[in-house]
Amino acid sequence: MNWYSEQEFSDLKKQQEILAKCRMPKHIGIIMDGNGRWAIEHGLTRTEGHKQGIESVRDIVKATAQLGIPYLTLYAFSLENWKRPSSEVGVLMNLLEYYLKKEIKELNANNVRLLSIGKISSLPKKIQRLLFDAIELTSKNTGLTLTLALSYSGRWDIVRAVQMIAHDIRRGNISPEDITEEVFSSYLQTAPLPDPDLIIRTSGEMRLSNFLLWESAYSEIYISNKYWPEFRREDLYTAIIDYSGRERRFGRISSQLKQEIPNHLEKVKTEK
Image 1 (cartoon, one colour):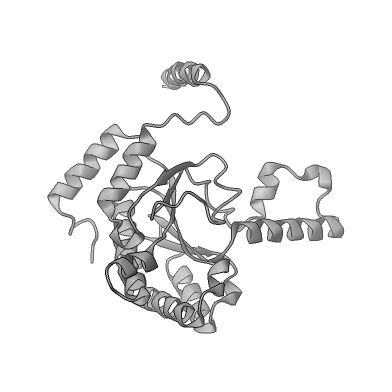
Image 2 (image 1 turned 45 degrees about the horizontal axis):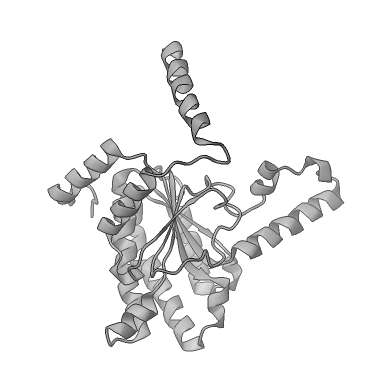
């Protein structure tokens, strides 16, 4: 199924308007929250909530690819989620297996490259094999890079990076004086990815929940009051429009940014 030929005209027009008017994020991270609460409020089981959440994943991945956004990272399963009842964890693993089996051909056909971050060795062996096969299959794709955060924790990745740096210092590969922010970032599992410009969290909760802690230092955060199973491409568009209206200063002040814009335009003009 081709995501571009099947797109409705009204949605294509909306995307074109956004692309024409908005400053687009290069990397979006999403904390997909609220599956269980959505199910309970609708008189359904938590399992049904997680199943409906997959429909949101499908729509958001498609919309992100259609918009030409290069990177999307989905917080699918945290290290802390292993503490949930074993029955629910089993359901989540089954749904992950289902997603990888059912969606990978379509992702590959639409030029999506799949990556994963997290303590993958904690996942069931069958899922590990499916995940590695999917990553290998899509490794040459040049469209959207879809990263699944699985058995992931921002603190875990930071501690892991420190351990790896300590080992390299012990081996004499680097010295403590060599460690910069850039060097430290290269030890994180997210090293191949740019830092997220926009973090979206659903369900109205106001916290990062251990997601991309180092990488999101200067990310813009958008909170949607909708539960994840309700979140669709129209909500993604709203988040992007909101993001585009924000002033990203990175520690500077507004007047500095205003001065940099004419300087940048003059440099571009000179280079031409």
